[in-house]
Length: 385
Image 1: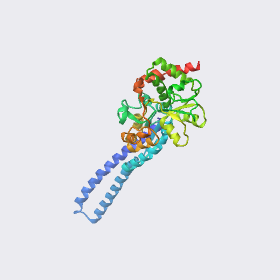
Image 2: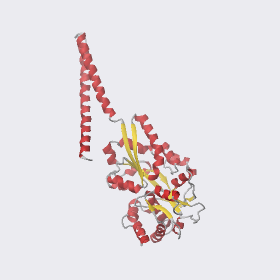
Image 3: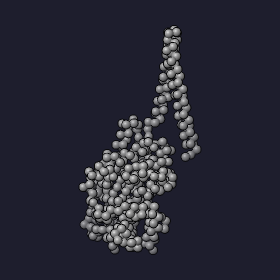
Image 4: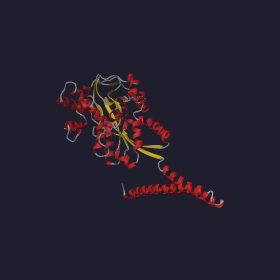
């Protein structure tokens, strides 16, 4: 914060304090006046009474004026939501519902400043301070953990919300070209010679990390070991000539520009694209990973902005039946049990659905796969050699 901003904030605080003291003093005087007028009624002239009446009227107006200024300063609240690229369609439907609900219950206007992009890049921006998010809805818990480790979110964020902080969920899908000319049916088929895969970069994109973990787990959790898993993912990324920044760019490259034989994407994105007229064959592998998207209040920023109450209320609202139905309309697998039952028939059951915990948890995943010089960097180096 600049020096001028600090002075402005200090001035605003002093002004609010002064208003409070003045209003309290005026209220005290008003009470004293009410007591005095009763004792004077029997002992003074009409002229004295009128004078006291005018003084009382002035005090009432002054108190009301101060009170009015105090409440006016709290009329509007602006929240900054930072999220990953493919959630925009859901939030565009959910945010107006929350704004209306909050207005009805609290008579307070809430506006949202929204930012969408690759989850890794968004996380870095929040940590750097270029995105002063009040709320983050990101592609994977690892990203929220990074913000927590940077001191912006308090330890234990995942236990402060329902469902361990997970608010939306999906699985991975393999999209092919019309007629599936490369006969892609399973994860193993992505390592075949001549198959061109469109995928995102794990250094900037949340889906890319989920993709990598789906590739690795499809081998290591079905009888393979680290050596066979490493050999497999090396072949897959050799078949991936371009790594995009995020899921949206990968989809555009595949659908709009016609590049690649195979696209790995969120199941919800693939189904939604089909409903919007871009219908291509896809497979939801029976060995799959639960793609869990967390939401969290950014403690340091809400305390700075004075937005904690409304920010927490919005996070809570995201778990409501009303909000979860909006996620479900966009083909996310909801976390609200009522809505899960309502849409169960829309999503194929997964025979082997593993989670990040099956791969050792996020601390282990970050160190083993995505840290500097870890497995992903080695895979990339091997393919460039």
